[in-house]
Length: 375
Image 1 (tube, rainbow, N blue to C red):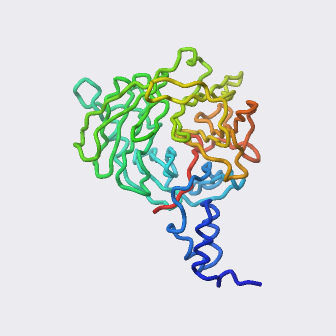
Image 2 (cartoon, one colour):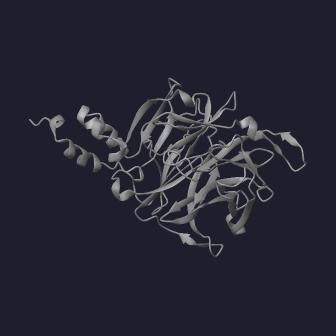
Image 3 (cartoon, rainbow, N blue to C red):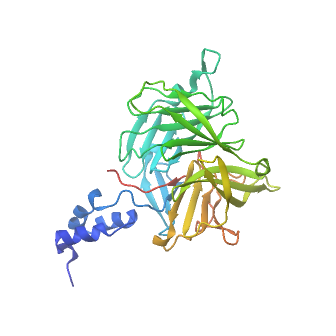
């Protein structure tokens, strides 16, 4: 029998280069010492698309988190005490935005390396001028966060957040800044449902149905740049009905899509998703194109602060033309809705094996987390 550990180093590196799924790459490095040496970041395409994990609270030990792999159909545990007692918001680039409940401490956390980037506190974010000319203490909580670039790859990025509460607040932070920079929210009085960074600009979707571009000066300007908003498109009034429960903004093949989620409330006060509608946002013309009826070979993942698409042709266990969603709200029954919507026939089925998961110690719904390696 061949001794795989004694293969030539260049051959092992060549094999490592052909592994495209992070889970397989990590397993590759665990085979033996020579394979682990070859399993370096230089031998892996850090920009290759991956299937996100669903992060679930460990039901027995809050120092651990469970990660459900849709492509492998299995759950793995990871020691991650940094998220204990924190609200976690997943960011598409593979990071978590965490807010410690009793202190308001905020960090960006890379869950797979456990690297942290310290940010100004939530208390600092809650102290801002409200138009009266005086600094005021407000209350609320951060429900959205989005990055302009991946902190694993560059230090030149912007983090934008949305504070939900009686006083709507948008703010951003750059590496090196000591505090949050607040944005005039006169055009966001209805609150923001979704944020995305697309082709060099931030875009927001308001709860009143407006898609707006948020523009501000580059990284070499002062700490208080002039921020401007531009109305891109406003949805038709017929779209805004009581059955619309959520909006998402997501990129697909270079285009910006608006995703609308519909649900009905049952007698047990539980919301059940019924369907989704997709439209491409024509940024240049300022209009929504005709409704998209199929995702083709792509599938979409939706969750709290999360919207992403992947090409399923590389992943046999991920179904094409489906939307996998973990609802942003927690049902009154205490169970989490983790389902997949089939665009072809409109059927909705659970994708999580076994019994439903209760929201015992969850401070927020389970986030999708993109597996990634630090550069």
